[in-house]
Image 1: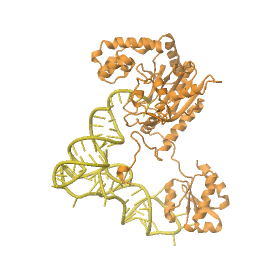
Image 2 (image 1 turned 90 degrees about the vertical axis):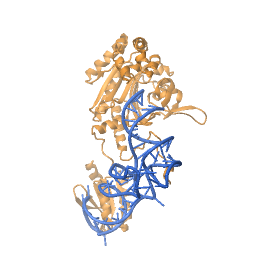
Image 3 (image 1 turned 135 degrees about the vertical axis):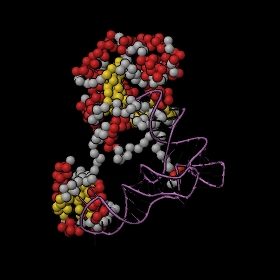
Image 4 (image 1 turned 60 degrees about the vertical axis):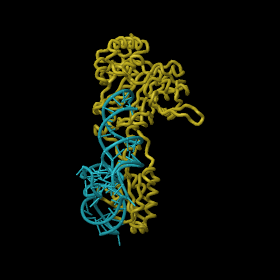
Amino acid sequence: MSKQKMIKAPRGTYDILPDQSYKWAWISDKFKQVAASFNYLELVTPIFESAQLFERSVGDQTDIIEKEMYKFKDRKGRLLALRPEGTAPVVRSYIENNLRAGNSISKLFYNGPMFRYDRPQKGRYRQFYQYGIEYIGTADPFADAEVILFSDYLMSGLGLEKYRLEINSIGCSLCSEQYNKALVTYFQRYTDQLCSDCQKRIKNNPKRLLDCKVPNCKSLADNAPSMLDYLDEKCQEHFEQLKSHLDSLDVDYIVNPKIVRGLDYYNRTAFEIIDIATEAQTALLGGGRYDNLIEFLGGKDTPAIGMAGGIERLIAAMEKENLPFGEQPKPDIYVINNDISTKKEAMLVTAKLRKNGLKVEFEIEKNSFNKQFKAALKSGANFTAIIGEDEKNTDTVTIKNLRKEEQSRYKNDEIVAIMNEKCKKHR
RNA sequence: GGGUCGGUAGACAAAAUGGUAAAGUCGGCAGGUUGUGGCCCUGUCAUCUGCGGGUUCGAGUCCCGCCCGUCCCUCCA
């Protein structure tokens, strides 16, 4: 095939190659362990949904909906979208399947690819992998504390140290309205000093002004009124309780009143875990409360809180801190034959060992003993099983421990039991 | 979507001021070495500079378009 006709992975996507894939497995295993210890159950939803689901829940003024969503029509003209985030599908499924029936609280986790049409760069892809949890059915600040504790356990469980938890309360719709008014009043005095984006933000979403990176806007934002001063009594109380729970749990955090989560459905608690090892302060994970979303999407009035994080960014952060991802899988035993005349016997021994659950490689292509032996060493196997003329004639197999340089011969029909024992010891 | 820098073998990578492109390291394969250790030695592995076009006697180099990556904005995970 000529070079120009080579089909490559689409922009912003990539293959997780065999020498990397164990890292994904390591992280999702760890995530599932933490989920199990907090008693969350897995919910798997489709990778595409009705486009409306996201337009209504995420908010049609957001970048995600305005320009990042993979939206398409299927052959019957249905408007669908590749999911750009995980919460809306979980909520849709929760309502549709009536998951509250018989159980007032649902604790769900998910893990899988998400899609956003962004400009790709490191830690930002068009197909990326996200894990997340949703704690549905309670407005109690204990739930907020638990979701944050989960996030903290996940980070520390993976060995990460250079991260920071930031929390905030963005209040309920009432406080938010008051606060927006205050912000508009404040910023209107400086309209002509604001960047063009922020001039629009005053009208559409004044809170977004707070995390504008343009220096002028930034210094104006520093002196802007704080959300925390506009919380009503109940929201204030909720936030105080959360902080007190986190203090009791010994979870370190800082209050950052400028956290504004990007999606419209959030209220009250918002939090992020920031990677402080990388210069660009990218969020490793983010979450918050969304007490109105379920009713908004047609369910009963049900409070909820959740969090989600990106696996690519976790891997990048772990690599920066030189953390282990477990080991790349290796065979237990590498079976080699002396020459072609014993290849069939070697194949049979291999089959027998594999059937017993051992990880076994069988050298097919190379015929020289020396080459096979070197291949065995390179594979990382702990043992090699040798089947040559002598073994064939005496119905035995030579087993060599490649670490200890010891070897001995065993009867062919005992080999499975013996190797089961030896390999168990080695794990 | 705006801007930056970049793209040379399977991987990494050197050199070429518009004038014969490709050293080196790793890796693969074969042999040295037909039953025993990662070493070592030898051979071998690109009709070719991301793709397409232009200028030129001559383009990896200059120009235009596109693709991909990178970083900064925007934004997010």
